Image 1: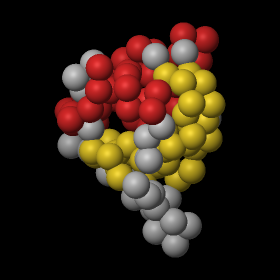
Image 2: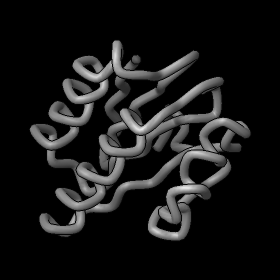
Image 3: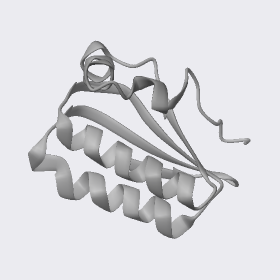
Length: 107
């Protein structure tokens, strides 16, 4: 997990397989996003090859906290089939804003 802070956006880049063993790292990254309190948090999931309910729960909790504090949560793709499947099967895909690109270093 890698975090990059831009002027108005915190980007959390996630790679590889995500499951229960990664729960603490995922929560720590999302906690840091809450502490940064930037207007937007973008989660780059374009390189996630496996995801389960651990990621789903973390995303939903983060979305709720962002909505409560008036901030935006954006998922960056393209979403890999494993991530898309978790969101689609759970019926939560439509709850997220999904963008194909994120901020650039000049943002």
